Length: 177
Image (cartoon, rainbow, N blue to C red; front, side, top):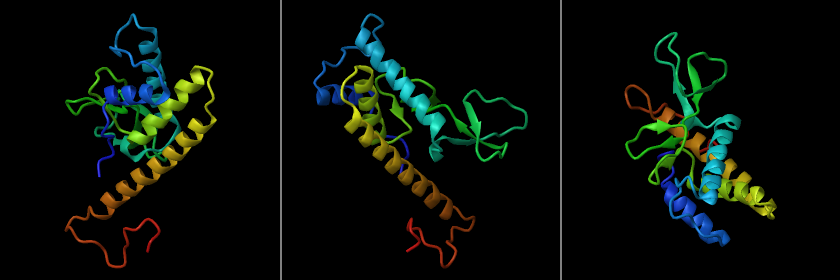
């Protein structure tokens, strides 16, 4: 299970605008289009807040060389000084991670549901429109997204033994069943 969402930026914005009855911008990266700039600013704020406020396993990285500074450092994981959370939440078509979306075919390290509901909530809130239902949906999407991402991460750890075996008595069910 990939932790990267399947939806590309262009589809995310088009679907959101269709859902709430707004005209999608022709070019999201058009500096002259105020709505496009606003959508992009909200999207980047959403990404920064998701990185900073939650422990997403898909953002965990290891420092590979002692003393080397990393450009995507956000904070250490459990004060380990080896594992850290990255600020790179966007994945380009080339597979490289980055801090901001810059192309319509960029994907996100968060689930489609988290991105759709988060962008919807933040856009409605920014526009001064009723957003309480959108906020509840976003909270639920984050909860579900974290649960799924942590389960997938744990499943990969459970299956990652050197000899390929799984220890007896270990269950991959999230509730140990």
